[in-house]
Length: 462
Image (cartoon, rainbow, N blue to C red; front, side, top):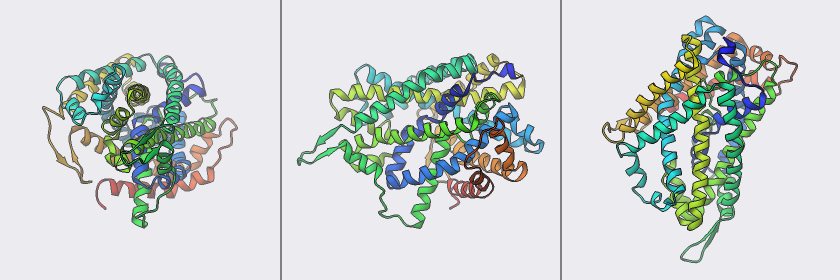
C-alpha cells in the first residue's frame, strides 16, 4: 500500500509541497485586505501570535496524524479510533467541495495573466472587465479546464515525480517573484493634482503601524476571529491536505524542523503579500482603495497597474504569474487530498482516482461558471451575504465543515488520544518538540474554544 501511494523523497520536498499548499490565493488576496480593514499592524500582531500558537498546534496535529497512520484523511481518523470514521468522511468532503470552485478562480487568474502578458493590462482596469468576463458563457469554462488539467497532470505523475518535483521548481520561482514585487512596490510614488506626493513607504506605514481607531473589545474580537479564519486559508488547516501530505513524509524525517519551516515560509509570504499589494493601492487609490475587500485582486489591482503607466503592464504580468504559480501549488494539494482518499478508501489506482476526481471537478466547475450567467441566482446566507453557486460552496466548506473538522480533531487528540500521542510522533527520531507544553494546553482548551466561537460567528448565530 505504501509503495502504491508513494512518498516524498525527503524533508525538503515535503516542506516545499506543504508550503506550496499553504501559499495560495488566500494568502495573496485575502491577507492584505483583512490587514487593511483590521487596523494594519494590529492585525499583523494578532495574526503572528496566533500563527505560533493556534496555527502551530493544528498544523503539527494534522501532519503528525498523517505520518502516524500513513493514510489519507478519509481513512486516517478511522485508524486512530473506529468511532471517529465519520470525521474522515467530513474532512474529505471539504477538498471535494473546494476543488471545483478553486479551479474556477484559478481560471480567472489565468485570464488576467494572459491579458497582461499580451500587453492588454489597461483593459483589465476597465470597470466592467471582470464582470463581463465571469458572466461570459464559454471563456471561464475553458480557462477553468486548462487550470484543472494542469493540476491533474501533476497529480497523475505521483507524489515524488509530480507534486515534489513541481514544488521544487515552482516554489523558488514564486518566492523570487514575491520578494521582487514587494521590493518594487516600496519604490513607487504618485503626485496628486494638489501636489501631494504619496510613496510606497507611506503605504507600508499603513500596513505596519497598528491603528486602534474605533477598536473596542468587540472590534478586537472581530480582528482575532478574522486572523483565525485567515490561518485556515494560510496553513490549509482542516482541509485534509496536511494529513494527506503528512502520510507521505518518511518516518526518519525531522518532523519538528519541517513544521517550523512551513510555518515560517507561509507567514513570510503572507506578510510579503501585504507589502506587494497595500503600498500600490494606497499610492494610486488612497485608503478607500483597500475597501474593495475580496474583489481587490481582480478589480482594484489592475487599476493600480494601469496607473503605473508602461511599467504597470510588466509588473502586472509578473504579479499574476506569481499568483498563478501560487494557485497551482494549492490546487494540486486540494486535488491530492481527494485522490489520496480514493486510493486508500476505494482501493483505486492513482490513474483512475485522478481521472475520476478530475471529471467530477470539471462537471461541478462548469456549474460554478454557469452560476454567473445561465444559472444565476442570489441566495441570502446566514452571515448576511448574498450568494451564487461559488459562494454557497465556499460557505459550506469554509464556514461550516472546516470548523467542525478542526473542533472534532481537537477533541479527538486533546481528550481521547491525548496530546502525547502527537508529541511522541513528532519526537520519535530523538528530536525535541519546542512549545509542547503550549501545544497540550492549546489542543485541549484554547483551540477548541476559539474554534467554537469562530463557528458560531461564521454561521451568523452572533
